[in-house]
Amino acid sequence: MKSGLSYLIAARKCEIDELDQLARTSDLVVLIARLVHALQRERGMSNVFLASRGVRFAGQRDPQIAECQALEQAVRAGFDQLETEARPGTTAGNSARLFSRIAWVLPGLDGLPALRGRVGALELTPAQATAAFAKLVAGLLAVVFEAADGATDPEISRLLVAMFNFMQGKEFAGQERAFGAASLAVGRRDEAQRQQWLHLIELQERCFQVFIDFSSSGVLALWHQGQSDVATAEIERMRRISVSSAQAASAAVPDPRLSQDWFDSCTRRIDAMKSVEDRLAADLRALCARKTTEARSELQQYEEVLGTLAPQAEGAAFFDDTGTQATEPAPYGRHLERSVLDMVQEQSHRLQAMSDELETVRASLNERKLVERAKGLLMAHRRMTEAEAHKMLLQTAMNQKRRLVDVAESMLAMADYLPLAETPQR
Image 1: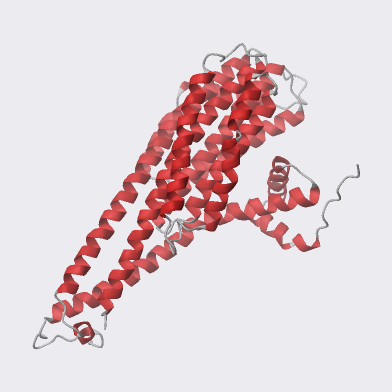
Image 2: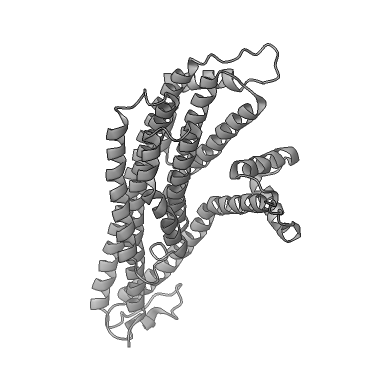
């Protein structure tokens, strides 16, 4: 009959399996971050290429596409490895939602060659190309979100939450770059354009605030260092020019020549964000390695104790009064008996503390899920786009002076009472 320590060892082995799987998932997240950054650069080049009717970035597109293709193959290999090495019962590796997200994004990767062909043939507008790349990036970020949601270690989960929100904020920064460049190039301004620009700025700020809440001091120092440069100041200046009230009679129409300055400043800002992203990736890998090393070291200690433990020895200390001292040692030592029970109790306390902290970390992810569900409800019942649904939720939250997640919860509670939008007759 096996002892309690044997099952403690089995529990530790399960933790190690989960950590190994989580390390593989984290490696995949790092690869996705690199691919997303490369796709953002390709999207920016494609946007300008199309806007200039094939004049600008004609020579730079091919090397950038080649970089994206190499990173895409690495991500695909990561997908395959995650599926192949997933073990039944491991939360991170065997997540149905994670694999469903991967299944959804693969057709987008398959469609990239055709999209690039249409860009090269000047068959798309800049807005169409931007939207297509944004849809693919959103799918890749959804994989990162599910990886963070499936993490079972609170420290690793915190890092994944920080990384996901930073990547999402960086993506909104990329969308603002494309939107601002196109808006300034037209040389006109209206209220709809102003609201859309403000919406993109607000989305970034929300993501970066969550990133700040979950990041270490070292990462935050790097982030603040990058936010104080000349490019960021120039972006803020052009934002003020572009989003000033459209109704103001004294407001001057932005100079179309600002479009190139805007694009270049945003590109420098987004490239600077890559150093923060790289730091998060390095910290994630180091944390996974440290956690696994610590777990394996403890497992070795347990196995060494088990090798010196006599049958039934663990039970000798179970009912002891912790306030009394033994006058004579048991055959294998009261210290050994007590240490085994202490190890079991320590493991129990540690797992409970991890569970409590993990619930705190996941609160941010759960809020995002509620908001996404509320957006989907509005899209189905009011026939809105995703951007329109999100803006409506934000506006409602501001008008009612409530948190966005509280508005989303209230809306979901009324779901059964909302009629579906009618399909237009053809």
